[in-house]
Length: 422
Image (tube, rainbow, N blue to C red):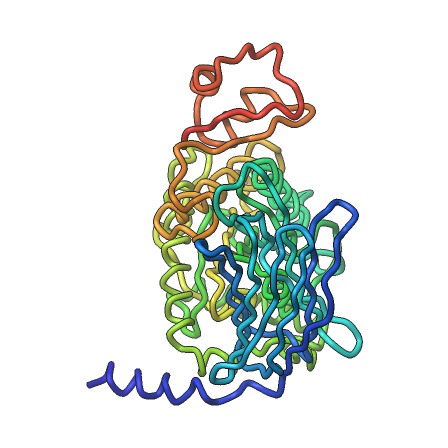
């Protein structure tokens, strides 16, 4: 009976708009590199679902809670044939008809003074046999700028989180099929609302927030992983979420107040409950996969053995699986030493990366490298890389990397692509 009532509520909610929003076609451009950019205009950031289909080749963008005047734009630039759109029950559906399979970038949204631009880019490639895109991972380095976060002995949380984030960014950037999105890449302050809003605007598939805890008792130590919930799973989780919200509020009074162009995650959670429940379920799976990897790290002590729940505002996107990783307590001497050095930070980044990859084995994204599951990952060697560090990043041995690729370790070079079987 409960499920029937819930389904009815969800069905009725589909017809409750989140606010006036219109969608209009803007233009089609060929970029200097030969890519094709298709642009649309919105009044505010929207909830979007984009996917590609084959036979015939096309890309579909569903834009929720919008109205569009139906249009059809023929164009023969590169692989493009036709761009068309129509309304379906408070949903605008854009279809890009193609002559062939393409590499495409997941649509992103850019706020300007009087409108929001929705952009899709496509690229021809002779190597592509089906429509393909990268998996977008939003990496949120906690705190920053005037917000130092927790303070340890000669170490600040904002610095630790950014260095771990950059380690993770590097692995994702140089691994074919993944693309990192840095919420902050420098020492600057970013409002809590702006963090998850940026992930929404850039079309992230996952959101990982990285932190390093602090406590009045220096003996408290270890890493933990959190998923969003209105009710905390422990006293520690409740105190931690309150502390982070108070800290953000004291630095910038706008917390909790959205820009008129932003997508209202709170209102959407009540309307799209099924999407929200799926997000929580997927977030738990992601958290468990990262936790499994952290437990395998011989240098990282676990503060909590299971995924925890807390009201972390930064995790509140209704449909983007999101987790918060506490890498340790910088008020603890052991954790502080571990996180102040590159090897310790690299191990946290490795655990997060491998957890993400294991998650996509369970929840593969259509149109990406994980569908179907690949036999191996392809890593592009960068300047300064050595085989031993590459092996550490992927949780494999040096001998395995050499064997898989028949390498001479002394003759690897930047731009060389190697196989990693994980």
